[in-house]
Structure formats: C-alpha cells, structure tokens
Image (cartoon, rainbow, N blue to C red; front, top):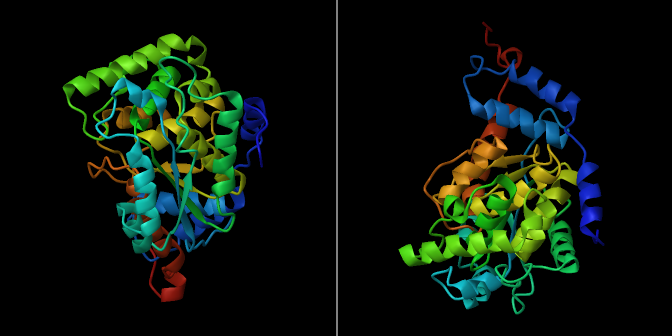
Amino acid sequence: MTFSSLTAFAETLRALPGPDAAAVAGAAARNGQLTKPPGALGRLEDLAMWYAGWRGDARPRLAAPQIAIFAGNHGVVAQGVSAFPPEVTAQMVANFAAGGAAINQLARCFGAKLTVTALELDRPTADFTRAPAMTDPECCAALSAGWAAVDAGADLLVTGEMGIGNTTSAAALAAALLGGAGADWVGRGTGVDDAGLARKAAAVDAGLARHPQAHGAPLEALRCLGGRELAAMAGAITRARSLRIPVLLDGFICTAAAAVLDRACPGALDHCLAGHVSQEPGHARLLDHLGKAPLLSLGLRLGEGSGAALAIGVLQGALACHSGMATFAEAGVSGA
C-alpha cells in the first residue's frame, strides 16, 4: 500500500482488525489444563494467550520472526545534538549488511529474519527547529516504506532503527504527544556531555515552539518533528496489525513512533508488547503513558531493535511451554 495522504493513513488505522476471541478462549482453556499449578508460569501464561489471540491459534508456534530496521538521517544534528556525525548512519547500515552489528548476532540467536531499509540517507530531514522535518508526501512515503517492509509470512515483528540525531526527534515527539519541555524527555543518547544534553533540550523546545500545530495532533507531530525511520516504524507496526502479526517494541525511539499510533487511534498498539525498557530516561515514562510493562530491563541504550530482539527469547519460551507441555490428562497426572 502507498499512502496518498496522512488522512488516508489515519483511515487505515481506524480499520485495523482485533484479536481472535475464540483463539484466546481456547488458549485460556488449554492453559488451565497444563501440568503445572495455576499461574505457576506467571506472565509467560499471559504472553502465550495474548499471542494466540493475534495469531488466531489456541496452540501457536513462533517460527518466523522478523526484525525490520529502518535508517534515516536528521537535519536537527546541525544543532549539535549528537556525539557522532551523520555519516555514521550509512556506515552502520553497511555494518548491518556485512553482519557485523549487535543486531545481526541477536537475529541469528533467535532465528529471526533481519531486513534493513535505508531511507534517503543522502537527504536528511529538515532541521525541525527551522522548518517541518518532512513534507506531507515525504512522511507518507516513509509510512509506505515501513508498510512494504513487513514480511507477510512473519509470525512476529521487531522494529528497530538507526539514525544519528533520532533520540532528539523522539524526545520532541514525546513532548508534543504527551506534554512537557525538552528537559523532561531528552537523554544522553549516543553519549553527549552536559553541554550536548542542554543543546538537545533547547532543540526540542525550539521545535515545539516552531510547530504549535503538532501539539496533540499525532500525525502532524510525526511529520513536523519525526524522521523517516520513525515514520517507517509506525507504518510497519500498522502493517503488522493488519496481518495480525504481534509486535515487540524496542527502545525510546521505536516507542515514540508507536506512541503516534496510540494517540491517533486508541487501541492501535493492542498487538504490541514492550520488549524492554532502555536506559534512555524518557523511555520508562513513555511506556507508563502507554500502559506497556516491559519484558526486560537490562540497561540497554543501543537501539537497532536489540532489546526487543532479546525479548523474542522470552516469547519463544512462553509459547514453547504453552503449546508443547502435556495436559494433566495426556500425562496421566492427577489434577488439583
């Protein structure tokens, strides 16, 4: 699908399917018959039933996860908001292609297909302190690229990103969607010093002042303050929902992109779980606002989808137990 306008994308959001209630009921019934005390597997039991509902199968397997990384460059780096130059974005995309990044290793660990979509790296978004980051057609093109990147044969999606300057963009998005000033949302990202942190907060404040129409208007906030990779993640998460593919959200940047969908259409993230909570200070606040309890908390701040990729293993474990365990009747074990 190619989105012709942000209005068309909003209409797609409002038409998304929900989970399969019969599969949820079937999974709950099976969970009650497995050879364990009730609730003994804790949150793993809830994960299995949630996954079953979205896949429409009371006894599902997780066999074909996809990790989709999107890369984009940001004009706001001109404000001195990053410890690294924008050239690093393309260099890291090359590293992904060569198999040398952390996410490559994690994808192999959990049997995930890794795809990388580079979004006009030679043409950064506009500096949002001076102009909207993207035009309507540019934002729609990025949403469409994310939509197209999802493998319809996948049974789980992790969205990740690479983009120098994108923690500043994510902080600006969070502030526009949820309120607050730059200082409430920015963190050290790739490792800026105190002066760099102050520049990030100032850039966010300048962007909010420059684009008052973005306050409380989620898709307009994405266009004015976001980046191509953030819009692409939003498009991919939406495409996954249309296919009933469950999603594990990654860190602060991914979650900011997802928050656009939640604010544009309540319930749009029901097929999503938070893979982890990162070290970026705004991430925990954002997850609280979204009502998403993270599966992992490991102090990560890498991006690339790395935290959510690790959480694939948790979900695989939950489903292995749910779908592979014997029931009391099958095992000849007396129930309670």
